[in-house]
Amino acid sequence: MQVMAHSVVLPIPDDWSQASILMQTHSLSLWDALLLACCLRAQVTTLYSEDMAHGTRIEGMTIVNPFLT
Image (cartoon, rainbow, N blue to C red; front, side, top):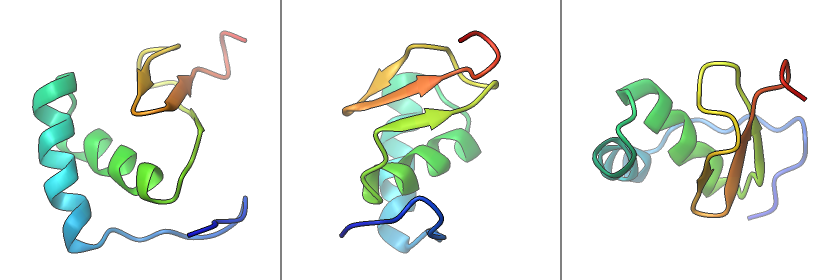
């Protein structure tokens, strides 16, 4: 699935299962893990967030704090 820069991706049931795994393996909150699960499904490679650890790589996706770059 190719997602354009302005596409909306909503959670599907499989995302909840993936979020549960991400919560356990990366010590994330439920909502951060769900966001990451949706982003991973949408093949996002860079997620800009000030709330998550800058530079963290999760399954090929890099988290970037835009206020640190």
